[in-house]
Amino acid sequence: MSEQRTRPVRDDYVVWRQATTRWADDDVYGHLNNARYFELIDTAVNAHLAEATGVDIRHLPEIGVVAEVSCRYFAEMGYPRPIDLGLVVERLGSSSVTYRIGLFQGDGDQASAEGRFVHVYVDNTDPGRPTTPIPPRIREVLAPLVRE
Image 1 (tube, rainbow, N blue to C red):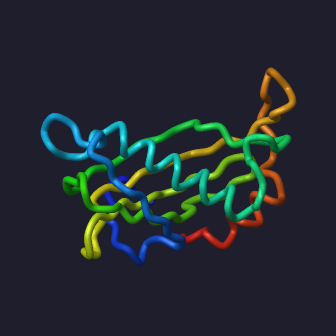
Image 2 (image 1 turned 180 degrees about the horizontal axis):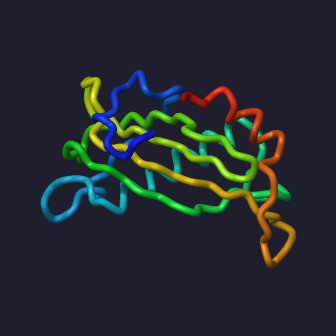
């Protein structure tokens, strides 16, 4: 998809989870600190993988390591309101997957932010960590999230 996409809406995402904001999440300006966005993006992806597969993904023979992460900001968010996190797979390759994560606060249909997150799968048993195909149990839970 083009980097010049319009502001994402709730219908752009397939699965959802909610995160609670904390007092400490806000920065000196009274809005969500930019580092917190990246924590939420990471949590949305990895919590979904762990829940959907039913295994501790950290101990699989093949693991996804972050190759790229970014965030586009559209509107301020902050404490004390919860954040809805929508997840969709933009691209499912042979050894990598690209996710988009929409962050929504309140009842509005437009995202307050959208993250892009790329996992590259590597051999967790080899210190050199060569890339490896996405394991079948992971691919199985990602395939339903693909949206062109």
